[in-house]
Structures are given as structure tokens and as C-alpha cells.
Image (cartoon, rainbow, N blue to C red):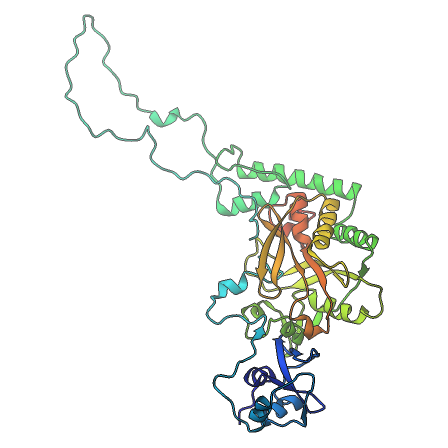
Length: 443
């Protein structure tokens, strides 16, 4: 006999056999990656593992029970039908809500669109105007229509007409040509907020490189004399002080986590997003997000800290990324969450606005959705996503032992720096051996 999982057996029979052998009618059933929440006709609610080999699964598979629940008021026909191991085709099935499972017909693009990340619409680096393509100008166009020439009479002798032979010399200034390698070098030497038009530049590459190099050396000396603080570290300390003053508890969770945590987050080995995870051995990985650690802390602090429980974490995360201009493989995340009372969208938007106003970063809020959490709130700066925020609960909470309302948001610190200092690409804001506070140090 094929061993079917518990949710399938409940859907088929519309019944549930508890550990003490009592037969219950099922009113509602929800499943996550590993757990199932069952609401019975008598009003009782239980959360159990969605196992094929549990006692309840065996009882439903073999149609065995000791006595029916009196409060569920099951009809004699329904009890006898279950006892005789008869399944009617017209039996009403309980609808199973399966969350965080990708539809097989969706293309990979729809999966990749929301992790994070999730995710998701990142502003590309500021582009420098390229030199216009060479083409035919009005002066060089040839008039193919010919008109007959007529003889001109003159009353006095004149010098014969001489053709102007040096037409190209009419151009007063010659354009400086740059190779692609030279353009990339010049762009790397530009400081925050600086721009250049290669089509209008009259200086040679050597002159331009020398000027920018001297300016960058001056900038670095000024940073050393005035602050000596790395912007990424400074931003982390500033945000830490902000949330501690707001009553949040700072936590630090491991960077190396079991891959099973990602399966609980709905990112199993059969999902496209799992290809972005750095695996370490057979069972471990570098964390691609902070959510697993926060889930564990919420569950453990639930009966210890006063209501509501408020925690946050800032730390490095790792993902395999192909778009180097918009993403980093090693980046820094801020996640804050609140569980218990007053967990609604208004409170979440209030916390977001307080943080970004404190950091002096312009933003707007848009509605979105992602594979992991479902409906989300995206925080945008121009066309760049700064954060993805969620109002819980969500079905995956069962897998982490969390059963209270919660709100939370995740921010990428490098993106906050890019928005705050108008950096040209995300690499200037991250951990780097080529840039310091957005300034090139390859001088």
C-alpha cells in the first residue's frame, strides 16, 4: 500500500484520529513545508508534523479508531463508512492550503523575481554619455540631382576660380578618442556625484587620469584627517544605536547554518533560488538571509521578554549573484521584527519612516509579493529597492514554532549607502579592496 502523507489522508477522509484514538471531523486544514495545522469540528486546533509514518497517519490509512468525538457530532453513516474502509467518490474533500510551493509551469524568471533579495527592480549605476556614433553629416551628403551649367558673362577679367582643397581643416577642435579600457579606468576614478562626457572631453587620457588620481589622493587624505570611519561600519553603528533607543534587542546569529533552515523557508533543493546558496558540505550553507536566526530568537524569547517582543540583527549574508552592478555576493543585511501586540501595517510603516527619516534617505512604499512570504511591502528609493517588509502571520510560522502576529523588514546596508551618497554602483558601498567610502584606492 502506498504511504501517503497526512494532509492527503485528511483530505481524502475529511477526518482526523487523535493520539488517544478519538475520531474527529475536520473543519479546516493548512500545511506548510513540514507541519500541518488542523481545526476540528469540535473547535480544537492541533499542529503536527506532516508525516507518512505518524500514529495518526497509520490510523487514517488503516481506518482504525477507538471512539468518535462527541462534540464533533459525526453522523453514524460517516462513522460506519470510515470503519468499512469505503470511500465514496462524491465525498467532500477538505481544501489543503499549500504555501511556498512553486507552480511547475511558472518560468524561472518568476521565481528569481522575489528573495532578499526578494525581492526585486534595482537602479543601475549612473551612466556616462557615450561618444556619438560616427555617421554621415549634412555637409558630407552628396547631392545626386544635376542641373545644366550655364556660361557666366563677366565685363572685366577675373582670376580663375580655385577649388578649396583643405575642407577637413574647417574642424577647429579634434575629439579625443578613448578605448573601452581607458573609459573604464576614468569611470573608476570618478568620485561620488562626478560625471564626465567622453564626447566633449578635450584632454588626453594621460592628462585626465593624472588629474583624477591627484583629486582622489586628496580625498583620501581628507577622510583620514577628518573622520577615519568606514561608511559601512559607521552606518551599522548608527542603525544599532537607533534601534536600541527604540527598545529593540540586538541579536547575533551564526553565519554558517543548516541547509534544513532554508527548506523551512521554502527554498529547498528543488527550488530555483537554492542555486544562489553557497553550500558547505552536505548539510550546511552560508546564510543568504537573516530570517532563520530571527525566527529562532522570537520563539525562544516569547515567554521571557515582555509583550511585544522586539529584536533586530545586522550582519553579513551571501548569495551567488550574476548581476554585479546591482547585487553583491557578500552583502550586509539589517532585519528588525516585532511579535505580539500592535503588529499591523501602520506600526510597520511607522518604524520604516522613523529609520529612513533618521538616515535622511528619500523613499516611497509600494505593494509587492514574493515566493517566500507572499504579500510584501517594498520600500523604494527612485527605482532601487531598499527593503522588503512583511505583516505576519504567514503559514511558514508553524515550521518555526511561532504562533503570534508579527511585523518585520529587511534592508541592505550597501543599498542604503548607495542612496545616501549617490554612489555609481553597489560595489563602491560594499566590503572592497578597490574602494574606500566610494573612492577608488587603485591609484
